[in-house]
Image 1 (cartoon, rainbow, N blue to C red):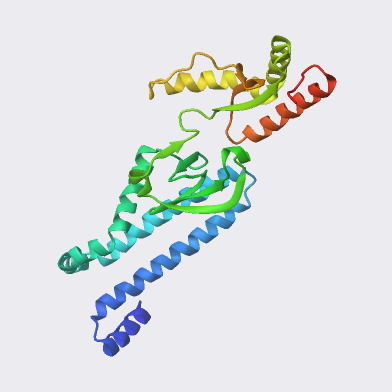
Image 2: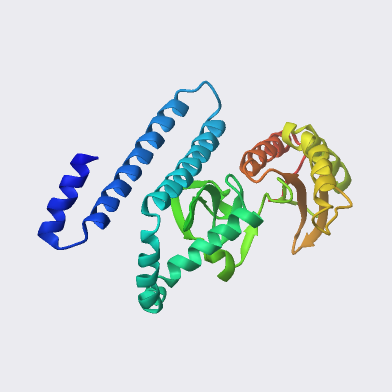
Amino acid sequence: MHLISDFSEYISNISGIDKEYIKLTILTIFVILIAEIIKWIAKNIYSHMPVSDKKKFFRNRKSKIIITVISFVVILLIWGEKLNGIITLVSFISAGVTIAIREIIFNFFAGIYINMRKPFDVEDRVEIDEIKGDVINTHALSFEMLEIGERNEGEQSTGRIVHIPNSYIFTKTLKNYTKAFKYIWDEIKIELDLDANIEETKEKIYDILFENPELQETPKKMEDAVDEAILEYRIYYNNLDPIIYTTIKDSHVELCLRYLVHPKKARNVQDEITLRILEENKKGTIKLYG
């Protein structure tokens, strides 16, 4: 402490700033540095723990929040009664500052809303301002998404991380693909000749759909999700099993295969079902158009 006092007095003599404010500023920087070191140590400890990556992430995130809150309280205690003078000074310039940092303030309170109301959480797949991706982190002023491609491109990850201001939650439309349910309706369309045996073809495709391991598990999981969601949302489904719709299009018949699937597994399921249909086409049990 003597070293800090001597250094503060030296800086005060040079700058003309009150010695006490310099001392408090140095102590504040010291607290912040200690907090960052503890965060770094905790991060390294968690990285070597024999648990899943998901648990490592959430434990590290929780420790960061706790350390930040503690350091903030310590800094408030350090400044103590000096805060009254600072608050008085800030009140004179608050109008100009508020205009300059209104976006930061807006984002901060939007962040509080996100943490309280939970319109989305880490790992949810969301779309906001025409940007779609999986939420990978949330912060006081923004959140981060791992961007995915368009639906017709299989919604695969692009590898780009997008930073979104928290305020978008109030000014943009948010679509959450996994909040109430972890499954979405996906579709595959196939074309048949007009003279094809539609009933036999549909029976064969139903066999393919019901044999898919992912689709076998979905209806039961979806029923459980619906039971949980009806207390919060006025929604319901009459049918959770795969279904095939038939339409005549120009010179062919179009079958629309509709089924529930986890959005992150949709492309793999599409690939497996399509390959099975192509195999049956080669065998002659399913005759595709053209």
